[in-house]
Length: 298
Image 1 (cartoon, rainbow, N blue to C red):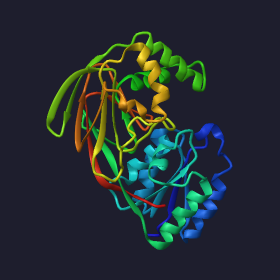
Image 2 (tube, helix red, strand yellow):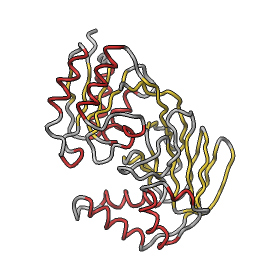
Image 3 (tube, rainbow, N blue to C red):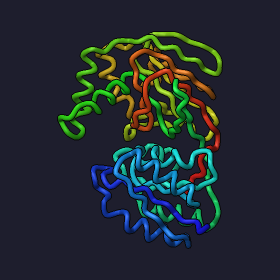
Image 4 (cartoon, rainbow, N blue to C red):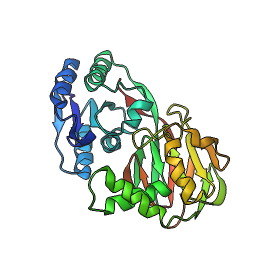
């Protein structure tokens, strides 16, 4: 079976700023001495399926060209397998790439992937694996949102107008208008905690949303998940929280708690969870850290 490099590219990532990047990436990846196959897909579901088919066909590596959403889709086919994984950052948010030391310049990242394939080397990083109430399994690489930010994402995705970032800004205002603390039950490595909260997040990397450092001390190589939850903050303090997220200083607030665990179960009513910016589904959700689950080529 002739091993090849499968490339999943999102032409709309980064608001289309990197549309001209793909030909150069393909040329650079070709220096690894393997044929390069560009995967075609018209939706996120089709993208995942194309990656799974490529792996089944004998791909030596799957390369995601895009942001964290593209990475999330491609990861579903390589997580827990021996297939190599490469990332060429080309999105609005490239949080996983930043966390694991992938160069932010696209062609430089592609050169690193090609060199790793030629030299037969890789770097192992942890991933988070989720299991929902129906037994469906998903993987994510950065941060799972299960509080106010998840509510904002869900509302923004239901809105048709306005377009672009303004839709997200409006969704924030609309959710702030009716914000309330919900009762959460977290089970951390078998220890159960129940409390009211507006913010709950679980992750393997420091940031999400293009640099919001929700879990500033998260380490994707320590075999543990970072879990953050905050006592009820109220509307005004939630508004003040966003600029602090950019620097990770929100964790200094005495109302914010960060713990680490290998396995987490999250339960709450009326929350649709999001991971890597992608919709996972309603709580409850079980999350576990799988050490070394991805072979990153860089």
